[in-house]
Length: 409
Image (cartoon, rainbow, N blue to C red):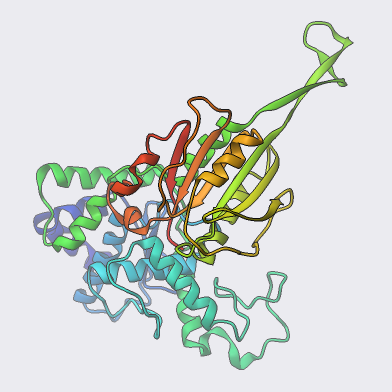
């Protein structure tokens, strides 16, 4: 197989400088154990010579080109959605590539999967995940390609006639899982790939890549501040502690002769969820999931209020993680009521989960606590700069505030 791939790469050196440079950042490795013809990740391009034994050179070149473009888009190394399934990641990647490039025979998109063109990788992930959840309910396969018996093993009661190889969609999912086996977040690997793109930008040597695909690849070099980074920074800014004496800890100056001290976190956090008509239930569920993860430790109490033009219902406690809440309201949006509640009860931090379509609230010149705006705006998220639209620009300079755009769901 290497004797076929070598001439392909040599030709790329002359006519496809970007593909050649990206290929050279990875090691070509034979792997006959995998069930797919070719896959990438962990700085390797793996191929199964048994599967590709009868392939013509044109088909091999096409698949290799496809995998190298996948590397250039950063899919094997970029930040992934929380709890992401490798099968869904791979299929979403295939959809993204075929949307920007073209379909090839060795990549099969699940039949019946409907999607709009021009969406982001994250948006395609959400579409694929919903499609598989809807179509793999029976038999009870999980999205990783194994029969789910609740304990992580094979189900003895499963009907042998419904095994993955007899289920076309499940077969695609199983192969997608194997194809993404090497995928993991790797900033160093991602940066090496981005440097090859920057060199192509400086030299303007893009080869034969189409304009829309070139734009997609260039967009990967733009540094985006991930919402998790913003949340971590906000969490650090609102954490506060209360000091108490204890005999279990020695005094730093006098040892066990005197009582030492221990600090416990005492942070109070208010989460205000926009339940106006422009925010859907999936967006609220995603925001709750994010908050549960980032504020599970170190926050004494998280309280939740629902608002549109005013606050609805009672203040909800999230001392225990919540997967969902009952949505009320669905009117317009006014930020003043939740901000007033935050100021009145002197919370350490306020997280406003909203689409941002409302006038700025009024606050005193100085006040206690910090504010984080978590904004749903998919057009802004897809934009290369990820800047807020003009009517939301006031959030950028709002006192004691940070903001982040949430990924699509």
